[in-house]
Image (cartoon, rainbow, N blue to C red; front, side):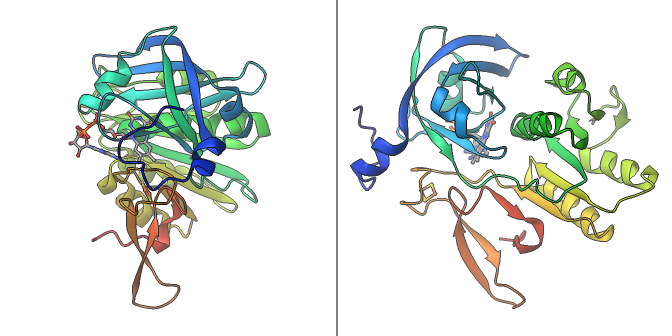
Length: 278
Ligand SMILES: Cc1cc2nc3c(=O)[nH]c(=O)nc-3n(C[C@H](O)[C@H](O)[C@H](O)COP(=O)(O)OP(=O)(O)OC[C@H]3O[C@@H](n4cnc5c(N)ncnc54)[C@H](O)[C@@H]3O)c2cc1C
Ligand code: FES
């Protein structure tokens, strides 16, 4: 088994349980900075839940966490969307059909869809990739859903056709005003909620830049709609050992703060427990 630096504390049992070699089937360029990788990963495709992620080895010291965007249990294929941020994501975005990648996953605690009558996803930046999996699951469950996605511009936008293809209602926002709604995804959510007659049973699920998610959580609280947020903290091991990803959460009902591992207890948390200021 391949050993990667920075994983000394990971027991062999943990590695055997979740490390797998996944084959790249397709690499689709979405725009200048983003690609869609189709991977042959039957074990991940079988058990992954929306909001979970894979931790992929790359050319750098540590693995890079990437949300699972789509799964097909029949073919064993999964899709992930990668936006190039630095060297690790650049290396992953250059993976070619036939290449093999070392993946740990599916990891983390995903979104809760039970007891919801309507799901609204609000994504910005790379958040639109993992939230696509939520919309895929809503489609499978025949659950009413609305996708709100925010981009800088039409040129920067990704997956708009794929979201629309799922049959959910969509609202695409862009900072420069060349999509459905001018402004940020949170502003589009506000517009959507003000027009939405019946909100009982609705849940808001969000992923993207922290400032956007904080605004989404505030709007959800104003409308008394339950909200779940997916945090994109920096990670290392991805399996709960190194504590690099510790994030501050409120202690139930008290003023104090405690820390939870974003890679195990998260990345998805109820919005009301997040300590946004830390
Ligand atoms: C649970 C989870 C799911 C994610 N899902 C996706 C996804 O579906 N698609 C995708 O493209 N990216 C996703 N990310 C972000 C991705 O992991 C980072 O962009 C990546 O680790 C950066 O590595 P790098 O070597 O390219 O950049 P680095 O050289 O390490 O950093 C380059 C820039 O990226 C920023 N960065 C580094 N780590 C993170 C991070 N964890 N989150 C946000 N910004 C970071 C740095 O601050 C820096 O500005 C996810 C992150 C997490 C924690
Ligand atoms: S990344 Fe190591 S504990 Fe979360």
